[in-house]
Picture 1 (cartoon, helix red, strand yellow):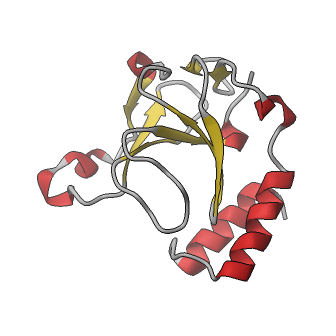
Picture 2 (cartoon, one colour):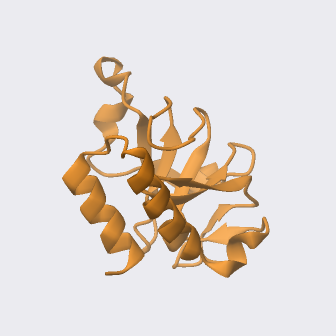
Length: 139
């Protein structure tokens, strides 16, 4: 099973609940072993369709449900971002407690970009930052 399939299966099975300490350490080690080597240094990152996502990034965050590149609003190519189709509800006042806003880029990549609104128990995500899977970025 590849890393992305493993992440999806784990999330589906556990509904993004925090994993127990031992299992969390195991899965995080697995994710760390599968981070693309080019992410060892900050640099511009692109979609598979060659659209700029961010000019640089802060760090790679490894949580219970995958490894994600973190970047700030100042590093983001926000002009290219849009709300993912069907995710507009996350902006409504009654959904103010949503953990993130699901964004994408209008190209053929279908990249999923998270704008983090609140903290979560399963990863060290910071509200106000953007996150994208290490498997959806290219140099």
